[in-house]
Image (tube, rainbow, N blue to C red; front, side, top):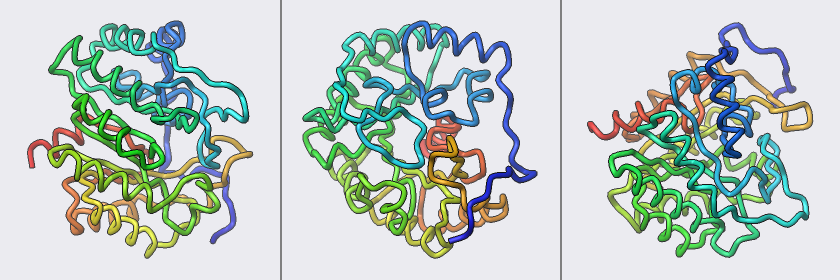
Length: 291
C-alpha cells in the first residue's frame, strides 16, 4: 500500500456550482429531500444539477453503518424513523426538474427488519403513479441478505437494480468493516435469480490502496454474479477524518480497466476519475438497452 496523498492531480477538475445549481439545491433542501450529491459530497454536483440530474437518498440522511470512505451522517446509537411523506416530496422534485430518469438510493438502515425495502417500494410505486414512462434505477444496500426485502423492491418493478461492491475484498476490513464482500456478490446474484430481466449494476472505487490484480479479480467476481453494468471511479476522501486517498489513478489506467471490463463480458463499462455509481446513469442505461 502506498502512502496517503492529498494533492489533486492535474487531470482532476471539478465544476464549481453555479447560480442555477445553487437555486436547485435550495429547492431540494426546502422540501427536505436528501440527495447523494449533497449528503455524500459528490464532486459532480455542479455538472449534474446544471443538467437536471440528481440521485435521491431515501430513509433519511443518517446511516446505521460506519464505512470509512463515506461522508454521509452516522447514527451512533440514536433512534431513527421512517418518513412516510418522503416519497411525495421526491415526486415534487421530479415534477419541478422534469426528470425522465430517476435514481434512488438510501442510507443503510440495519435498525429496520426489512432494511428499508418497503420505502424503496413505496417510492418506486409513487413515481410509477406519476408517470409510468419514467425510468427508475435503484441503488440498494445489502439488506443483510434478506431475500424478502429484495423481492419487495423488485416487485415494484425498477428498471435497474444496483448494489455497489465498492472496493476489493482485501480492503473491506479497513474500509467497510460492517459489510461483507461475498454478501454483496450474493445480493447481485439474487437480483438476477429473482428477476432475470432486471439490469444489474455495481461500482468500484479506486485509489484506496488496491492492487491491479485485485481490481481485475473483483471485476471477475462481479461478472460471475451476472452483473451487467460496471462503473469505476476515483475515490476522494470526504474529510481528513475519513479513509485516506492512497493513489490517484491515471486516465490511461481507467481506460485499461474499461477495456478489460468489456472483455470480461459486462454489457457496458463507465470508467474515469469523476465517475460515480449513478454518474451519467441515463446514458449508460440507454447503451445497455440497445445491446
